[in-house]
Image 1 (spheres, rainbow, N blue to C red):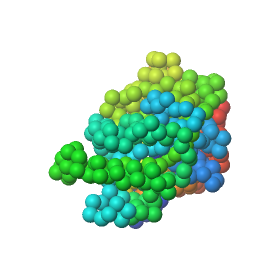
Image 2 (cartoon, helix red, strand yellow):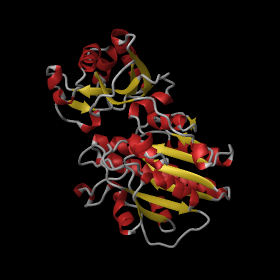
Image 3 (cartoon, helix red, strand yellow):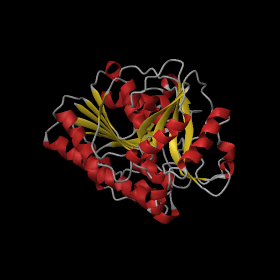
Image 4 (cartoon, rainbow, N blue to C red):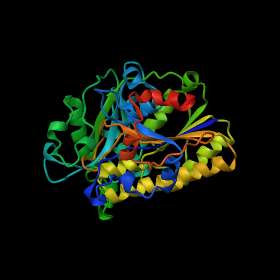
Length: 399
């Protein structure tokens, strides 16, 4: 038996008037997921433990079978693992986003416009981060390049301080959301002075793109200690994601990572490449389990784009799930496929919420006979409800 998780990050949502009162998942044309739902179990899964922040970090740990209340030490340390940062036990890792701020006002009065700087390329953002590094790095604070707008700051002998995720305050004045730590706040402010007139940002503005004109620190935490996925579940697993957070979880869990050329965490990622990599891992390379993570629905939710979120869900259906199913069926393989989001990213708030998410669990050896389509409302109506998200992985393997 082979096992597949297809995770559409932030795919769940609320009903939207523009879509006739449907969610993007219910509105999108998803013939493959809907066909699977009719021969699968669907239901609701609670991925965020009560009292914890609804981040992709806690949610994906939960889906992968790690209770966040036991294993979570912060988001950025997981990302640091993925890019090979040599963290010490006394280090604190922070996510360093390159964000777009308004440019007319004093720094504290600026508004955060875009948490991802228009999904800036890794190549451009590396140049910008290196400019910040040359000016601000010292023995205590070290910058590391990640992917796209997502980078890392290591604070030697640091403190796990409360910091606000930039996607939680889009469109808001930043003053009251700046770090309380004086040095971090000053570094953010200086980063703006370094980046605002950088040639890359001047060129981006000429092209109508959002400039990456400031660092934004968040997600502080200490070095994580996950147990081995293979020892925990007795399955040889691999991660397929463009996002450092997911790669870092895999590194911490001693899973392999597959890097897919052209996979970038955006709407126009290499969907087919991810699907092919998953099929090859299961059918040719001896893996028992693949975790295919697609970031696009979450990014489009943060952008507040109804049309693009619907498109991202349709791409997931047509270009990932369909392809993987066809490959597995053609090979005559027995497999179970779990399709779900990690958390909702509703268009109306443009950030994550803690609501449960709809799941679809298909077993090629024991297809059922239902009348469901795959969406939030019908998953809830099914009556299936798993209250502890970290138990889903065990359920997948034992069902």
